[in-house]
Image (spheres, rainbow, N blue to C red):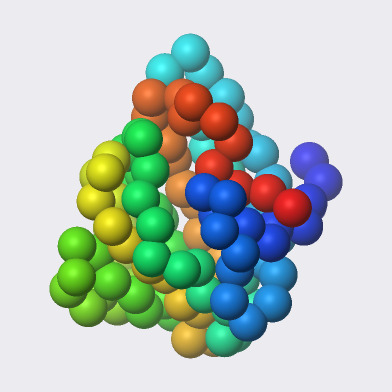
Length: 111
């Protein structure tokens, strides 16, 4: 599985530079991506038409979830429910797996 450049999330440009992602698995009910943001890269506030479960493999993330500050350390998880505004910023180089269900109507991340 090759890494692909990631410059947008939900059609909005990432802040602070690009990240990268790769598809891990796809099933009828959802999919899983591995995502990498270098330190300082962030998403703008956005929401999805699907639920996302994030498991942080390495690094440290901060962001917002429905207007509240959230910090996530390696080994931690957070849920971004569909329709709930959120943002993500890598405090240090960070890598996570994101499970999305149901299948998004359009690709939520990309170049």
